[in-house]
Image (cartoon, rainbow, N blue to C red; front, side, top):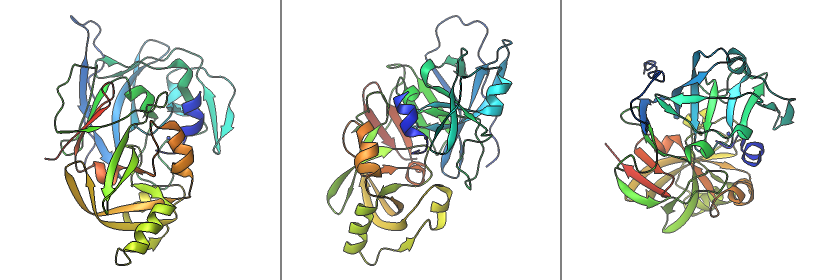
Amino acid sequence: MLRFSVLLVISACGSPAPPATPSQATSAPVDRATVPLDVLGNRPYVELALKASDGSLRMGRFLVDSGGGGFLLAEPFARSLGLTWGPAEAEEGKQMASVTSPVAAFIGDLPLELDAGRIIVLVGETNLVPRGAPGRADGLLPGHVLARYHVVFDYPKATFTIARSGALPPVGAALPMPVGQGSGFPRTEILVDGVRHGFLLDTGASFTMVSEVLLKTWGAAHPDWPRHPGAYGEAATLGGRTLETLSVAKLQWGDATLAEVGVTSQPEGTFEKWMSSMMAAPIVGSLAGNVLKQFRVDLDYPNQTLYLARP
């Protein structure tokens, strides 16, 4: 999700049952955890357990955002944990403050490796889902944390798995997935009209985005492709600024051929300059939930490989 990325990279059905809380004692180190994945408005959510200052555990609902830059906490949830933080600074219209007390977080029984310098409280914010979009989140689990692991978004089966490197056998067709150093942002490529394009794989965004230059190019070449000003239809769940919406008749992602894929456009330079500077190689867009929800998506970050499988 593009929101919140810059500052934090440098320093975006019914309710499932909550995952098991961390065991008080285990006979062997935990190398993986699988928990329910709740997808709402094309965005994936999981439950995390965080240790409060009194030693108890608090369950929080987190947006899993491979394109997000910081481990973010909404202020009420941070207060419920008894955390302390420093002075707030304004960034992208938000008040952000660095946490100064220790934070321990778990998915199932697996303790997460967090970068203490990138744990941020959004002061005054009660919900980290973009305004106008469905859903609620107490926090955001970002790319630089995911990048330590092999993670699986099994959208069709509504499960999320996170595992230490080498602990999990991959499933699906393998594709290269260069990972941005520091950001943890994963890169993939798609093919449209025989041309290959680099994209951020962005689980935190609900709808696929491209540069306005690329959308205009596609629209000019295919005047029959449906095109609308602003956010149209399902794209309205994206939040933020949207210039146009276009339906791409056909695109190729690895071995998968996709038809009638909706994309929206962002101002020129958003991807070509700003986001590309945080990627392993240049990009012109981000592949998001409206596409990802059709797949089991294995992101083997340590080996920089993506695996795609369909039901």
